[in-house]
Image 1 (cartoon, rainbow, N blue to C red):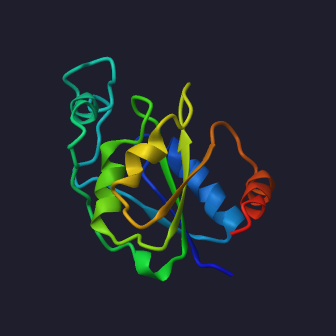
Image 2 (cartoon, rainbow, N blue to C red):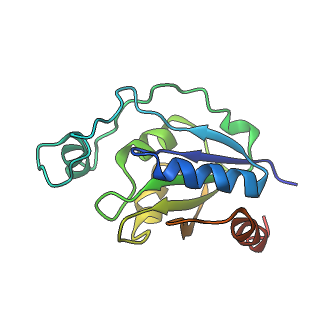
Length: 159
């Protein structure tokens, strides 16, 4: 059996809830990607073009700092990587996370939460940050996902 990790970034708690259910369903370890400077409600106001998240997402080179860098990526074969969708893609802190570690030979399966959009171009936007990894679009985990539904999905991936 391949060793599995669920790594996730959650700004408001929604993605964290999905990640915890997924980790349990997959029998995976759990790791939270935390920004060095936590996001405030004002930072996340996408309607304010001067909010922190708006500024970061306008700049494709933006790489918000991580609070810690102690994920033991080398220990895992498969990483489920979760995040909220911001501006139809992954938040740039996910790129920071991917660029900090060596994901060569790993399979990264994306999952996301969103109030209204899908995964969009998340995989293509993240692939260059994890050279040598197999990046796979997973699925949206919006609403209430049961552990049994997620286990069936994970089992269907034939990891």
